Amino acid sequence: MAKKSYKVSFKTPIGELMWVNISKDGADQSMAKDGSKMQKVATIVLEGEKKEQVLNELQQIWEGFKTELNLKKGTAAKSLGWRAEKDKETDEETGRITLTFKCNAKLPDGRESIVKVLNAKGQEVNLGERAIGNGSQGVIHGEAAYYDANGTKGVTLYLKAIQLTKFVEYQMNVNAEDLSDEGSFQGIDDADNVIPF
Image 1 (tube, rainbow, N blue to C red):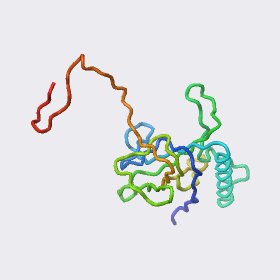
Image 2 (tube, rainbow, N blue to C red):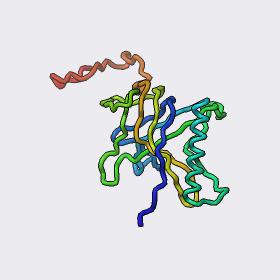
Image 3 (spheres, rainbow, N blue to C red):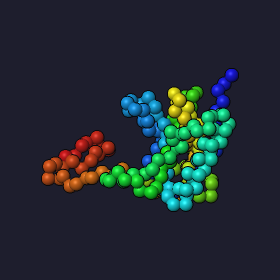
Image 4 (cartoon, rainbow, N blue to C red):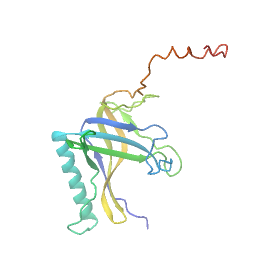
């Protein structure tokens, strides 16, 4: 008999999107960074009433899992799918929380796992080659699922779709400067296959 999966639909309120990587190959989430665990990932940051709303929802989901699975009354979750955001310089909590949703980049049959992108009206859109950058705003749609890894229990979040209310395109920042004193490379002239220096 197949192992029963305990999960429920879960979506966030509108928040700030960060570290979104839903490209074809996803991001390497393996400990060794050897490409053995390629996943599509999206993180949302929440604060204030929205934070409290989500904390309450996730606690209720956990209590429901405990009831459904007949877990001991005092069973505590290692994680409910969220983390307190910390200031990078001081390592102090900022008062905001982050929720990271993930899914495997490939389905069990080898096909690509698709994370849908929706506009504010809920209609599917195609971003083409553009990627969602930090500072975008929106809602993450997914599932909250029970996990039990070697006796460590909790809730993990699976990624299904991202609904954008504000789109900020990801831009790779390069700290370039004028180095023309060191050389005069201008580019490649494809017409003549000549590289002007």
